[in-house]
Image 1 (tube, chains in turn blue, yellow):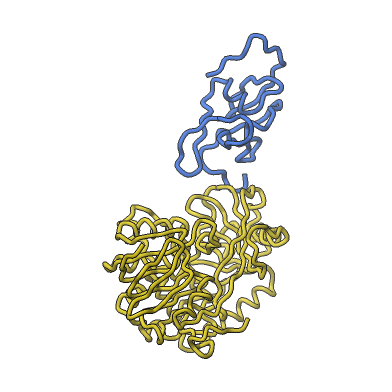
Image 2: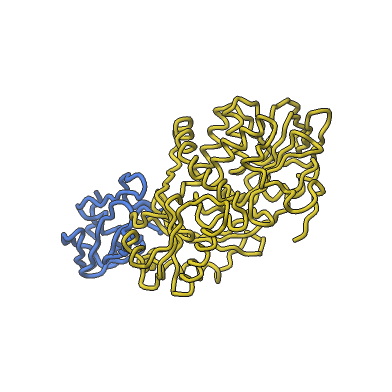
Length: 98
Length: 377
């Protein structure tokens, strides 16, 4: 969907999306990394199940909700990526206890 | 703005709109005179339980009235769905009051025993269950839960959608709804009532005072009394989570859309604009001791609301002797009793008389001399 700039020389960070490794860049937020990747990052909303992608990218719209390292409903646009991070595209409501 | 109506309902909250909907359903011409959006509206500050257990200690008639409401709720939900297309998400598969520690279990057991021993009350099969029995029905309870009481008649509903369904249905029945028109004066004159509002006067053959806490000042204008006062309640609401709670609890429930509501305090403070965080903290702490998994959920909002509380906690339904055709209705449990208000009270108002067999016990005369509007707090 998005193409990274050739000028972007930041070091690569490896994270996992539903178990598959993707290459992010140091300083990316989880949402930026997902949008720049080729994976289907669409979550499903909690009530109607409608597909959504990160939208405002500044912590307001909550359309970037994602499970990060086993914790549901994290705002992906506010969390920087870290090496080995486990990201799960959240389908529907957060699971109790996660 | 003069127009004649069969009935003017003063108050468009859950109580007033239930009665107005019921009157519209019976073909009456009805107007609802309401406050605006900033009204301290209990209809938006309730916990949405359709609740039977522990109701009526000290007044067996209230137990019977509540059981009747619980049994009629299914029909109400079905009629609202058919008329408006709105599903109010009624769920009536039984509810719990869970206890933490042995002392609370003992206190709850005593209450259940006293309810059973009360003569004249309907049996609604409330029973105490051990922690291990509770765990079979609610697998995620924590180790501090000592058990609790269960009543198979209990349930809950989406109360905001119920409120919306009543208003949608009223419109379909041709009921006139006028917001921003609080009633300031009522005169009974030659068999009709004239109600003063900021937009002018409205005339009706009958009136129903369903204005919540404002009933205190309105009732004496037509020879009625409504000894009551406001109380404040706080609620904590979490983000949506996958369904984990198959039954509602007195202070914890999961809505049809997945949010967990943690309630509900009862405070004497009457300012609903600020939260008492100490109270919220106690509520949240009890919730996570009951269900440890809740500790990981984020709270998305907390709020306080003002509710209605008749002086002795039981509903008031009365018909004026000095101004026949004037009725007053007030209660704390506007959600649970909505079915009775929509079907029974509306029918009685349409017929022009309350039925003593059903609601005679709820007259305000129980507080003393009727009609003088005086009461002590």
